[in-house]
Amino acid sequence: MNKSRRPLELDLLRSFAAIVAAGSFRAAAEAVGRSPSAVSMQIGRLEEIVGGRLFTRDRPPVRLTPEGEMLLDYARRLLVLEEEARAAFAPEAALGRVRFGIPDDYATGVLQPILARLAVEHPRIEVEITCAPSAQLLPLLKGGQLDLAIITHLPGRPRGQLVRREPLVWAAARISSGWDSDPLPVAVFQPDCWARDVVERALDKAKRRYRIAYASPNLAGLLAVVQAGLAVAALPRSSVPENLRLLDARLGFRRLPVLDLCLVRRERASSPAIDSMSACILAALA
Image (cartoon, rainbow, N blue to C red; front, side, top):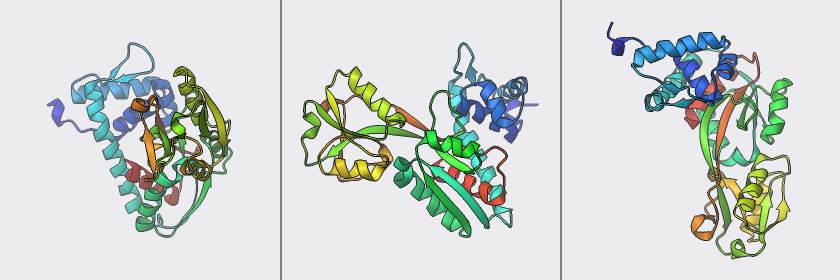
């Protein structure tokens, strides 16, 4: 059979996407409920179908080849369509309650398109939202207090399904010159927030003198401080309002990391409402 005519089986694509999201064959095997050897065989079959290697296996973490990068886009779109089809043909999908968690700093830029899509497609699903740092959301998922959550992936933590890559950027008030103060006044999240560690490491690496001028457990507090011209802050790009300016290398601010936003589901959590909301999240953020 001509390899190009062989079907791209969804199970193979699901394992492929899981490896990309988890960063290793072993972690992906746990996510899809298969053994590492079974997942490796699936990728071998997929490589036969596309006619090329999908991953470089010289050292961990696994990395995509150019063929793998090309397939990943198609795989994600096909898996999103599958989720949408499941939801569309489940008559009870419009009913039920979903307990959903998301970090507060993503609520504005990420949560709004999700809820807007959900309201159109499944208006009778009741969503109970918990805003908390990723480090607090994961125990709530494990303990059964949440069904779904979007988290920032950190090394050593469960990753789930990658749904968006979000740039972390420096932001300051347009009317303030505080960004060139010495020491630099900085507004940060609470001490257990990963973004705070990123900010401090970036400034230390740049040998920039700074002081923690303000700390807040939520985005609204940081925005109030920055908009008042009292400090600068590192924020997800989608959460920066238009009345703030972005600070870049030309002003002495090093580029910050890109954050991986991942959708994590409570173990064995399955219901028409949860499946439908999961499909909306993937579609809204794809």
